[in-house]
Amino acid sequence: MSRFRRRSLNAWSRYVWRIERSLIMTTHHRSTPLTPHDNRYTKNELHVDSVGLSRDARRLLSESVSPNTVRAMRADLKVYQQAAGQLPATETDIANYLSAQNALGKAPATIERYANSLHMWHRYHNLPSPVKTMAVRSVLRGIKKSRDMRQASAPALRLKELHVMLDVMDRETLHGLRDSAMFLLSFYGAFRRSEVVVLTCQDIEWRPDGIVITLHHSKANRSGRIETKSLMRAPTDSPYCPVTMLERWLASSNITKGAIFRGISSRGRLGAGRMTTQTLYVRMGKMLERAGLAPQGYTPHSFRAGFITEAHLRGKSDIQIKRVSGHRDQNTFERYIRIADEFENNAGDFFSL
Figure: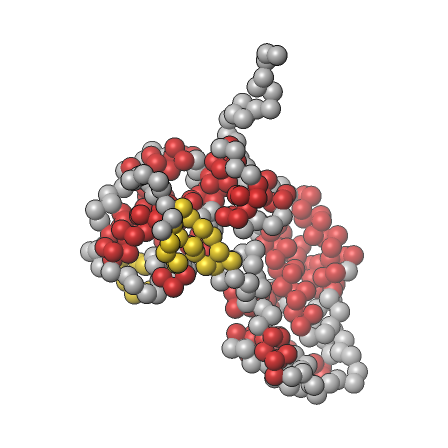
């Protein structure tokens, strides 16, 4: 790696380190603009120009990007640097880089994310973004057209299949109780797997009719806005009530604070840290295989799609469903309604006057 690229990457790492810790450094305003590959650029650390900003303004500036976004951007930029990419970049640099990533078989959505991270890097440094040029945007459009952009959608895990999977689980063990509670919350809360594994006891508000879950960050909410999901308690003594199953899990595990869903050793010993999204994926795969549902291709995202599809077919309004799913874009929301049977809920099901 060249001396320039090492300095540029190290400077960027120092910059995001400051963001993650809500520290904004003050720098002198540059009297002349920097151009791509300007040697003067490499001699300075990368800072946000905060001259004249109040303490409150600097705090708000530091909170404008979530830690997850910063980490993702840092990872994307590292890929670019490892591919011998220069920073600042020209439109030719980025167009060639994205084309090379496409040739390596990277998913179109991943390539789009790489481009967005490079765009933000230039924006943070008050540099014109080469990502927005016609050349780069045309390359991105070409990648989308040349490959099937419709990523394999996880099939909807409907309520019947959810019950089948839960019925093969041993709920007398810690593994069984944890997984049952986690799967039911994933379904009835329409959670993404990255959201359900980070839930803590402090995020749960217990009420007579159910629970209110607070989400501090989600894929669709990168601004840190507080969101909530309300999950009802089943009216009867149902073995499939998410609230009751969560109560059973917390009581059996003696968890009263911190992460709700934690790793469990093969000997049944409960870990202190939260479980990973990969563990959720593996545990679901094992239960699907045990239930004979593995060939259907379900993934943790199938819980979310399953809830939305099931609620839609049971006549719930879009507004009601979105209160749980958190969708804001109608087009994205409608893509989650996955009806396997083309004749189910068919608009032409009437034949008499």
